[in-house]
Length: 344
Image 1 (cartoon, rainbow, N blue to C red):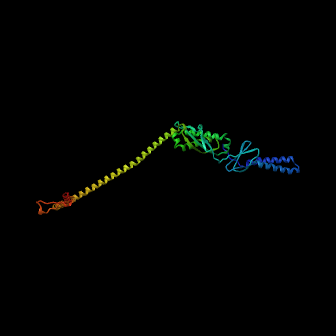
Image 2 (image 1 turned 45 degrees about the horizontal axis):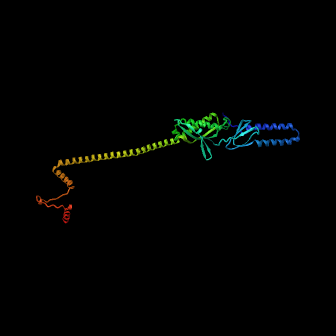
Image 3 (image 1 turned 45 degrees about the vertical axis):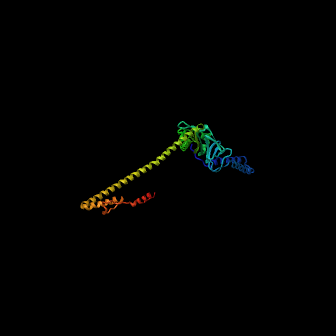
């Protein structure tokens, strides 16, 4: 239903002025004498005062005036002062900016709440039962539709919201409904509810659907808790194993890379050393071919230097060669050891 708010003054002035003119005409016809002219003015002032007293009204900033004439809507009025025809017109003042709230699945009783099982219990997509408690928030977006198109707007919103949430939950698994799927359920239920109310032309804008609580029924809550704990333990073990894997695999890869690098370094070192020794041998061979005796003697001396530097040496003079040689290794402490044994 499409409609445009009419001017606050245009529809009001015509009948009001018409009534005043008819009343003035009546007075002229009934009292033509000059004596009655003063009473005409008094009566006219009384009528005008009555109309102002009974016809004046104010629309608050959060309201919209809906004027009814003999029960039929004739115009809407914006916030501010306005006039109506007394006893002929009636003004309704719905609060169009107020945020209204409907509870489904529970009722608030002071500081506590009570679950309403007939509203809360519903079946999930995997054929489990879950208890859903939610709040529907809405405001008026079209005062005419809100007041006249639906007989009981509160009950209509409540029943439509129940149908919407049951439809969405009926397509959702219980694990998702109890854990990570709540935000998606809220969004889909809000969209479905808004579509229903738009078909009814209810003049309502759904601002939010908030899931207060989503739990398994009390009779099976303990079993669900055990299942949830087992799943948490499973996830914990999986995460721990992943953590161990993520720790040990990089470490093993690092050690393997280190061993490969060390092996490559050792291989390169051995190759370079072998190449150096081969180069040295070739150079020595070249010199050896040029003067074999000198090179042979130098190699012998170098070899003896290398060998003799690692062993104990005893030098014998040629004068005593071939004779019995008294040998006393003083550097090994033999003398001191013999004296100690003699003292004992």
